[in-house]
Length: 252
Ligand SMILES: Nc1ncnc2c1ncn2[C@@H]1O[C@H](COP(=O)(O)OP(=O)(O)OP(=O)(O)O)[C@@H](O)[C@H]1O
Ligand SMILES: [Mg+2]
Image 1: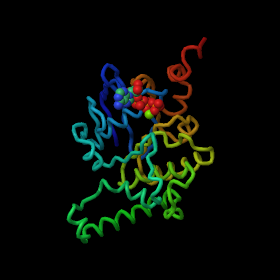
Image 2: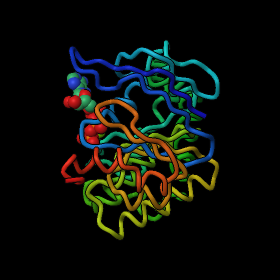
Image 3: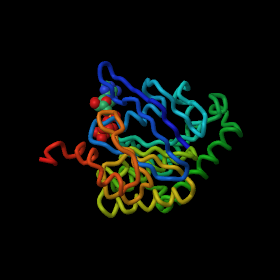
């Protein structure tokens, strides 16, 4: 589904992502983990074309690494951001519909004259929002203001917004951060459901129980470099990984 080859991202003298190669197979949940500052969010930004990078990013065999960000979403990438941006004074329905803007195909004249084209677009966005809400169990909350809802629901809305473009691959950056145990369980069910519907998910997450529970494969970054990759049971006991998280003193 997604293949990254020799991806490097530099910020001045800092090499945030260092010659990373990895493959995300279709229809799996693949997690990208590592200590703070390891380069995980930067990998997402590079996939989406939001930072300058060298190397290749391929979606289903298409090299998208030279394309500007707005063209990359056409290849079926949906993403959420680490710092949740939710419109508090908008309803869940409206928040979801914002995620559809990328598919906008009408111009200023359609807007002014409220043309048929605009009507069809809005109807499609509305239908998709209802479908997405249904998948995430938010259907009975569509009319509520997002700002009044528990954080766990807001994070689900954030995931939902990324789903609006009907992505083939969903990039989620710490969707469980700040969630209670029950909310995390809810999120977990939603992610497994999406996977079972055929979606591929690349997950950045610090909640190790969640990662170990739902991932088919895990890639571990430290200082921008891949230090391990494998199934959860392989990663759990990997010495390099334990060292990266706990430091050398873990072996003292
Ligand atoms: N726009 C930027 N300009 C300069 N340095 C940056 C920029 N974005 C990230 N960095 C640096 O790149 C490194 C990797 O950051 P990144 O946000 O990708 O880490 P992360 O693995 O997502 O960490 P966290 O788990 O804390 O979210 C860090 O040292 C960070 O300070
Ligand atoms: Mg990050």
